[in-house]
Image 1 (cartoon, rainbow, N blue to C red):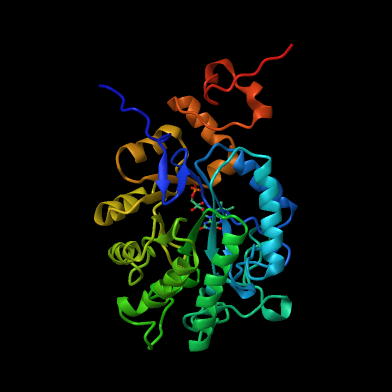
Image 2: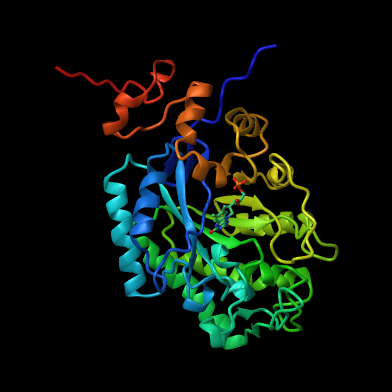
Length: 375
Ligand SMILES: Cc1cc2nc3c(=O)[nH]c(=O)nc-3n(C[C@H](O)[C@H](O)[C@H](O)COP(=O)(O)O)c2cc1C
């Protein structure tokens, strides 16, 4: 039996942005911002991820308004101060690393806002303890023992559409190459999609067409504010893993509409809207959703979730289950994962010049024809 050639290191073009390979650094909250402003932790972390050899780095969920942060430590992009903090540190990190497209995930936490950082327990922080009142489609709490969020009124919806578009424009100003709109994991846009969180009886709740209306309005506003030559993707939860919740069929229908509206990729995750979810975990557990969405829509698709091994990642691309793989925890564990995948599969990555001498003999070609000499 012949082993198919590795595809993980194939180029991929998304509008004017070219990925050197199909590995994407999945967005990962760092909970290390100061009033939404990036800090030197971001400089260090981004520097590491930009040296990873991935095809694209996606910056963490970035809130479009202060109350849209998940925790007080979440990153924001809503005013001049947050724009400057993010832009300056990103520019510094990029100057010290090989070129790599940088995406940013635009987000609003919805009813999951005002949470403690995970290492502080992650619970809802009441307003009197320094938190804030989260906003949501409906005044329905995430968990039964939690206070209900405030349901957004018509003016609130208009304000949030504008906030997403403003953040996209700020992203242009600081050189972000691609945007990903966060419609997954039980945050605001997913809350509109899911009947578990959306109990509205106006034009934004009830039927499928009503539930997708606000997320699509945000998508259209961001697409209009974002340059035509730069890609825009969307992360979705393919299922709520709860009876009576959002389904794969609805995800496929939504994906078709996003594609028609100019979405460049669909990033297929799952869950997050309800503590009652029953997730069946295992290696690549969300890949079958990516496969279904890709087959049904023909969209450029990203698979994510427990993709940890180079051959596993390559098989996902080779089998046509997805066009890109996003890795999160594996890249925290091993920030050089793409180098090691290149060594295992015969690919190449851009290595930083000061590290060129570090390649072991069996991986001598991982940086392509990089050569060093000394006297
Ligand atoms: C520390 C950490 C922070 C995360 N932050 C985000 C985020 O900002 N946005 C998002 O969509 N997913 C976030 N996730 C989920 C990951 O992007 C990814 O979907 C999930 O961890 C499954 O992939 P993995 O098995 O490769 O870790 C986060 C995960 C981790 C571990």
